[in-house]
Structures are given as structure tokens and as C-alpha cells.
Length: 174
Image 1 (cartoon, rainbow, N blue to C red):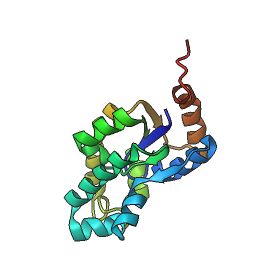
Image 2: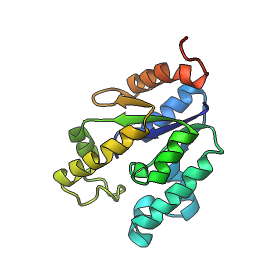
Image 3: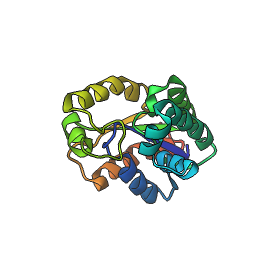
């Protein structure tokens, strides 16, 4: 397996952990949101504002389909699991690592971040509700779950690498 998808709610650390994990494993780091931004010529928040969430989600699915041609650590957007098609693609095309985190920590990280269109202007209760709505979808996709609450990037990356190496290199422990 040479494709690792990182999923999780906004603020769970997908981008930061993804780059560090890719470096540790000597793999490419691919950020789907950055890829969309490059192709669209605008940030996800601008796409949401100008073209709407439905357009962004469609573009996200298109990029996910194209990502199966790539190898590396692929960082997904927090809402990618909302579409059933995306959940199937993630499971089929790579090893899915769900970065979970305490909702209070997530909210503290994202609540006033204007670059996060799904967080901007929402109350704590609304953000926690969104997290709880997505949680079962993250879990159903995940091959591996890692709680990032209170851990350093190095601790998270070391934990992931230690748990996925057998999967990556085809060993089943037998």
C-alpha cells in the first residue's frame, strides 16, 4: 500500500501531521485542498463563497478519483467523508488513517479561522454537532484511528508510522 489518506475533522492536524508523516516515510505529501486551490485559482473558503459547498464537494470527489493515480500521504478535507462515493473511494484506494481529537480542542483551534468556511461564524454547539454528525462516517472509513488530543506532531507521526508499517509493506504479522 503506497497511498495513505488522512481524514478527520477540521483542526485535527491532517495537514501538519501529513507533511511530517510523509517526510518520515520518504513519501510525497499531497494536500487535496491545496490541489483544488491550485486548479481553481482560489482558496476553499472563496470557492464556498463564490460557487457554493455543492460545487466544492463535487470538485473534492473529482480530485479524490484522480488521487488514486498518486502515491504518498494524501491529506483530505474535513468534510470529504460526507459523500458515500468518497467513503468508498477512500476505502478502496488506500489505507485510511482517521485523526480524531477532543471536540473542545478542535473548536478552540478552528472557531475563529476565516479560512475554514465550515467553521466560520458557527457557535461552539454547532461545531460540536457537526463533529458528532461526521464522527461515525470517519470511523466507518478508517483502517486506523489515532487520537491526536494532547499529543505532539512527532508523537502522532511516530504512532501512525509504527502502526502502518506492516500494512505498507505487506506484512500481516504472521
